[in-house]
Image (cartoon, rainbow, N blue to C red; front, side, top):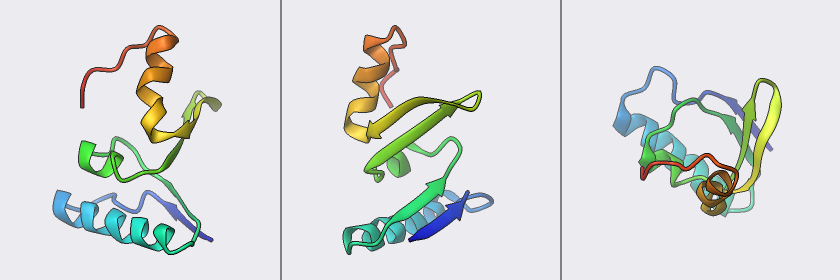
Length: 82
């Protein structure tokens, strides 16, 4: 299991994407990767499989990335595209 705290902080866009892509490849090989990240780019966000979103210390969403937009829309928080 690999835990990372903001692995893209201070990196340029290309390097940040490359780091997350490398972590994605590790996860695809069966390793568990857990990371915190603030305000990822759309390209980086789309590499994630699952999300745990916190708001004021409470879980706001926990589940697959592909369902997060519809989840928040159903709860009165429509998300703009990208």
